[in-house]
Amino acid sequence: MRQFDLVIRSQCTVTPMGVGPAAVAVFGGRIAAVGDYSADLPAAAETDLGQIALMPGCVDIDVAVQAPGQSLSQGYARTTRAAAAGGVTTIVVAPAPARPAITSTAALRAHLHASAGVSATHVAFLGGITPRSSPAELADLRANGVLGFACSLSDGGEPDLAPLGDIQLRKIMAELAMMDVPLLVHAEDSGELNTPEREGNAALLAARPPRAERRGLERVIAAARVSGTRAHVAPFVAAECAAVLAAARAIGVPISAQTCPHYLCLPAEHVPDTDPSYRCRPPIRSDANRGALWSALLDSAGDIVGSVSSGHRPGTGVAAIPWTLPALWTAARRRNLDLARLSLWTAQRPAEVIGLTGKGRIQAGYDADLVAFDPDSAQVVPVTEGGPYATRRLQGRVLGTWLRGMAVPTSSDSIATAGRGTHGGPLLPIRL
Image (cartoon, rainbow, N blue to C red; front, top):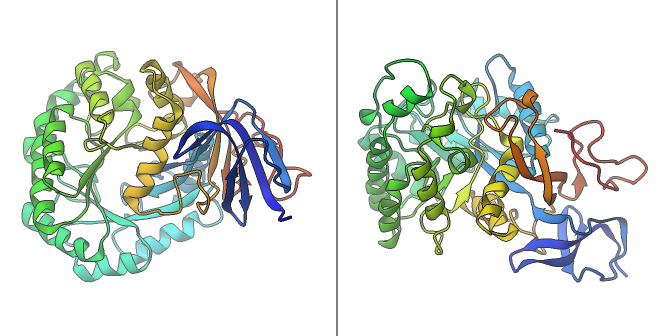
């Protein structure tokens, strides 16, 4: 009988078929079989999670890795460790802010070099588009492995990605349509933004009204409709624009959108005015907007907002990548949603958007990127963590992460591996 490298059993395994008991067998870094919980599956190593959930690892699109003052390699090491601690197994790196910004093959090589050997997750890349980007540069970036491209219609990529005008946007989309890769767009329109009248989160909110997102979204839809390019709005925040997005998809425009946990969990009415850890672009909006954004996410067809990623911006915005799953699950559980929905938003759909066909599902043939998640364990985010969730009580805890079947230690006592071969052994809680 065939011997697998690793078998993980859970009474609460999240697969495309739903949530239930199963045993997941891993061989050569991939899921070789998904069988009954009690199936006889000989393996070199085995873990039984019992009631702890086994989920596919999150695919986090548009992650900034470098904080001001960090070297690029330090940024990759720290960000990917934090990501793995939060159940993220693949990050898709935003081209900016970073030094260097990923707008050329030389810059991409610098990121590849900086991430090699220090990253605790899989790493993929987006190429950045500026008003000076040429078709040859885009083709070179694609040939060297970027999965898609990103641009901004305002200051979403500041200071490295200057805003695109309509003519530039349409030309770029025509090039990307021939490559068949997605274009991520920060869709706030620069012409609808104002200079904040003073410091603080309230002034930032007043200066960046929802109409900026609506106008930007209209521009993106018009360009995508002509070119056929797959456009992806990241992030989608102003829920009043949901009908515009739904109408575009209804007539066949290839456009999708993602939002972030802080827009779904934190209303502007509860944001401390002077705390920079809540400062992001677009800003956190009202409680009414938050409720409407949930309605867009819960749309039965998935035609409005289909996925959720962290929007991680260390040093320049909300930095909370380890808390994506607990924060989102805290809010989802209050709405009587299940782990299958959580996994759909954070793993399956993001992988589909960015074209990672072997990730995002617990299914035979897919990469064994897996997460042990305790949905019933509550935790208080330490004040030392900083960020918008500090001191908040969140539901759910990531207990372990595997990349291609190999346990990922994110701290000295996170996952016990000694004496259990290359695929690890029993799980211990990750200390966050």
